[in-house]
Length: 118
Image (cartoon, rainbow, N blue to C red; front, top):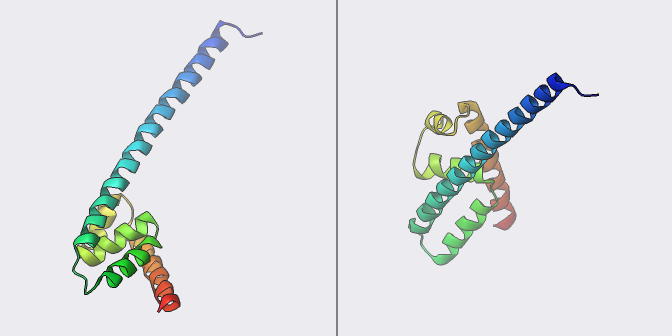
């Protein structure tokens, strides 16, 4: 049988779980909004970049679409915007080493795609 104190404990735990759920939901929404803003900015850069012909633009889009959103963002930030890895790391709240590893994996993925398709 549950007594009065048990009900208080259960209510306290339930309230704590509800608050944690709300906090994580807000954090998740904020992260998704930031990802979309970042990706939208990068699409504009790719669209406005000078290309010799339409085929090159399409090919660049194909290569970038093979990357994860994070890889794509890091490649564009380091190559197009010429930002330092440490600055990108601070912006994303991750280590510079994580940015470097992600960039390396992205470049490898791009290289394999280029070898396969050229």
